[in-house]
Amino acid sequence: MGFLDDLYRKSPLVRRTSRWARQVPRTLQLMRARPDEYLRSPPIVANSVPKSGTHLLTQIVGALVEWDYGTFWTSVPSRPYRELPRGTMMRALSRTVPGELVSAHLHFDPDFHDALDRQNAVHVFIYRDPRDIVVSEAHYLTNVNNWHGLHRTFRALGSVGERISLAITGTGPGHRQTYPDVGSRFRRYLGWLQEAGVLAVRFEDLVGERRTETVQEIVRFYAKRSGRLAEEHVLLARALAAIDPKRSFTFREGRSGGWRDVLSDAHKDQLKATAGALLIELGYESDLLW
Image 1 (spheres, rainbow, N blue to C red):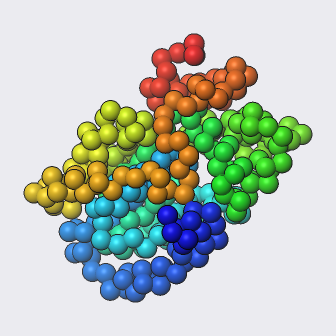
Image 2: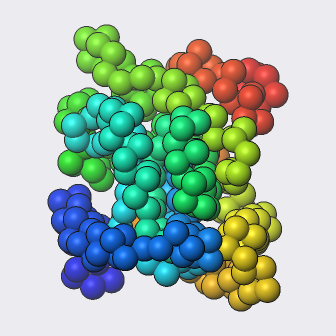
């Protein structure tokens, strides 16, 4: 890995500056865009619950697009850590460029879906076992993203166990509600699983035995929307070849089920209280006896 790649991995400011710089040619491209271009070259939105494999998904779908301007939408930015006004998000969603890749942490909203559908966007949503999410998030907010509004809160805690508890319950020092619990955070995205026209995939399938099958589903979903079904086998080979988790600046272990080695009984009780029903609803468990 070169110096610039290493700097990009370690510095949130560098990543943001790079994204801002790439918005200049994106704006020029947007000004020239014609309506018919969205039909043959749809934008792709790689949407996710945070810490659910965003970079893995963008590697796959990024192999299918023409442009990557670093466009990133999030309902709740890292700094300041508060939800953006709905109107702000609607304006952003209405300004995609034909053939571009957009990564996102976008809460479910039927109007958001309609805005993207009007631009023929290919919307792929990835989610993950909430138990692995909290382990990953505790590490990320403590050790990786020092730009995030919650970084200092996580960093100030004395142990990994306390940080995981904060990621589960949202309750920080002094029993202060720092942010929503993991079940509440996840449920803001849950509607995408039922929305027609959105392809929902599980992180576990992309890192497990169903990887090729799941990537093929993504490629076929894109090929149908773009009218490129005749090229499906070429696109599939390109998407599979693009997968390299270690190129992600948030890469740590890249596996599923790691929560079993980390969570204490107290953590499991907290998760059952905040996300037990959600785990059953998502099909990760059939009951609370885990």
